[in-house]
Image (cartoon, rainbow, N blue to C red; front, top):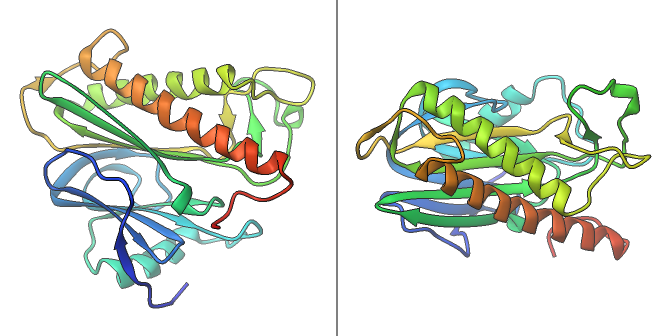
Length: 242
């Protein structure tokens, strides 16, 4: 993974103080924060409760099967951001296809950053053998919340985001072979990152303001990503950099 990569601003930014988005080459999307973010995630590298000022989503080859992806991401992170507080995700989609949705209410601001591949589909609660394999696929979601969520509220945010992801899959008509509902892929990952600014928020369900923003932005970004993914495959191509 060791290559020198040119850094550039991503083509879309959001109005959250201290947050900037970058591309390193065409393979690595970066979220950089001027101050550490409070993070809960299922990321390959840096998963768990964490404080991080950099989050990366890195494109790997569709045939990537290394047994130690965390090591590979750490090597990459050392080149891009030589500090320890880095969260790392992997995807088979080229990250210049990243979708970003942003919304705000009453000083609360939320951005959802996602890459949405829908091969490798699954449905929670169904045996693995009933799920279809149409190639590698992962839905990675990075939530940046300009707010002060408690630990339980961050878990609540994961639930709300997952519900929004499933809604996006259903409304886009993405199903398993045989027509069963698809709830995600076998390798989906999520990062919930909070600035810690503002009043403490103990809940993030769909009826709360922050939960509404999470649901709206995740649904929007994942829906657009799924739409682009399906369109590319209908044209007989792969969802890769132009």
